[in-house]
Amino acid sequence: MKLRILAITLLLGLISGCGGSGTSSAPAKDPAQAVKNVLEGLIQYRPQTVWRALPASYQKDVQRIIQLGADATDKEAYDRTSVVVQKAVKILGDKKPLFLATIKKMPMPIPPEEIEKSYDATLVVLKTLVNSDLAKYDNYKSLDVDKFLTNLGSDGLKNLVSLVPKAKAPFDELSKINVSLVSTTGDDAKLEITDPRGEKSTEEFVRVEGVWIPKKMKEGWAPGLKRIEDQLAESKATSAAMYAEYKAKYLPEIEKQIDKLAKVQTEADLGTWQMEFMASGLIPTGGR
Image 1 (cartoon, rainbow, N blue to C red):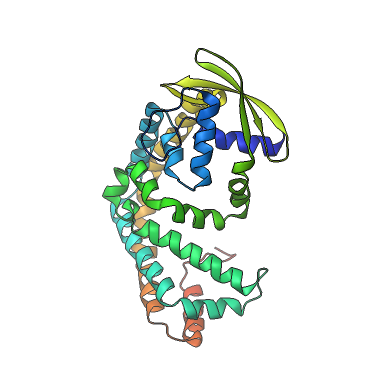
Image 2 (spheres, one colour):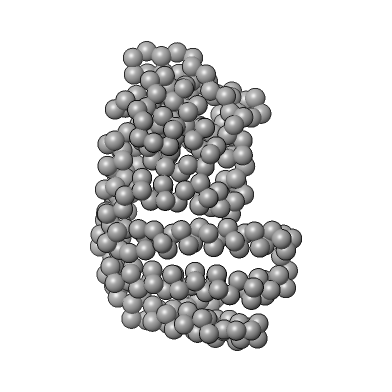
């Protein structure tokens, strides 16, 4: 299968079960129609469509992985870092003219107007994240994924996608994908997927808990979860010393540098701050 078909198939693997209305409606019984409905949801940049595409037990698996990730994270380090990030995002907004003027003087491969668009898109995404449940450890640990994605909204997703050129192209072409039913027998189905260039692929789907997902996704789900669980367990076992060093050595310096950045008023001030930041030891050099 060519890479283009593979990318589209993987995308459909995430979205194929949802009814596509952006609400909690029942999944479509016809697998091809289910995919078409959800494609429409993604064309409208509704990120919660992806989450609602998953079978209920898969959603529970994802929630469990989030909790395991939180268990492997130091609460104090998380919350203090979140405060730093919130300050940094505010500074990016408040001092946008200063930062843009500095950036535009640098050699860049894109025109000035595109630089500003990217800056604004980044700011929208960051503001959404720092104002979400990810901003506090306790909320992150019990994250309501559907609520989080719904709050991210179409504007958040559009801006996020715009920052990743390789992601934007597939989104722009979603309306050109054609899906048709080849055959269905009980909880098994075959769909023909035609990409915007006319390349066709026949993919096997299965129904899990009333939701149609690719057969390959079902086969790879449990092994994939096991790998993530093992990695998180290993991380938790070795993270205590890392977080202790981070809180004692690096986090105080990060907090100090952000407070200094908040006081910057001119391009000269910004240049001085950049030199101090480079000398702070927060960025590893070749000999470290």
